[in-house]
Figure 1: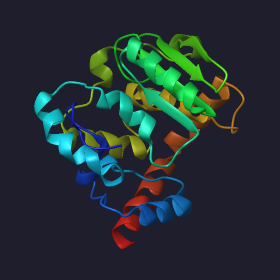
Figure 2: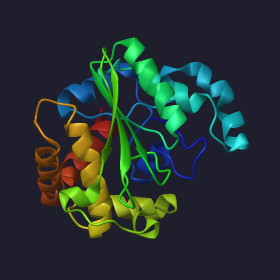
Figure 3: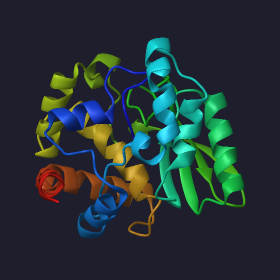
Figure 4: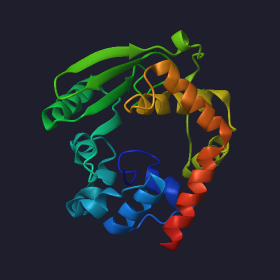
Amino acid sequence: MGLSISGNCGCFDLLELLGVNIILTPNQEKKIFNELGIVFLLAPSHHPSLRHVAQLRKDHGKKTIFNLIGPLCNPASVSLQLIGSGNEEHADIIANALKNLGTEHSMIVTGKDGLDEVTLTMDSIMRNVTPDAVTISEFSPVKHSINLVSAEEIEGGTPEENMNIFLELSKGRGTISLQNLIIVNAAHAILLTSLVSSIEEAINLASVTLKSGAVFDLFTKYKEYTLSI
C-alpha cells in the first residue's frame, strides 16, 4: 500500500487523518502483524527507489506501469492476494505475472463499471490465479440477494469524508450500500483462505464480522500499537 499517487485519496491519506503512525521500520511492522494479524506497509519504505518517481507520478496524475508493478512487489511475499484492477487488459497482465511467480492463490477483481474492486452497480469479473492456471468467472450481487446500487451510493469523497465513512462502517453502521460493498470485497478475500468453502459462507462471515463492530475494536488496537511501539 502507499500514497495516493494517481488517485484522490490513498490509504496513507486516510490512515494519516485517523492518527495512525505509518512511518515504521520493517521490524516494527512485523511485530505488529504477529500481534494483531494486520499491518499497513508503506511502499516507499520498502522500495526506496519509488521515492524518485513519486512526485512525477503525482504530477502526471494518471496510471502508469507502476500501477501494474506495485501489486506484484508486496514486501511481505504474500502467497494469497486479492488485487483490484479497473482495466481487464491490466488484470490479465497481473494475473499471468502472479501465475508465473507461483502464487498459491490470488484473485484479480474488475468491476464491469470500471471499478478496481468487486462492485455493486453491476457484475464483476474474477480472475482466479494458481500456479497451474488463470480461470475467469463472474460475480453477480443479485444472485446472492444483494441489491444493485447506483455509483453515487458507493462513492467516496475527500479524505475527511472517507475518514468518517470508515469510522461509521467499522462500528457496524453506515449505509446498507456501503456495508454491502465492504462485505462482498471482504468475502472474496476470505474465500482465498481455508476459513470457508463457498462464497455464501464467506459473505455470511464478512457480514457478521462487520456488523458486530469488531473492525473498530481491531482498528483501535492497531492505532494504539503503532503509536506506542
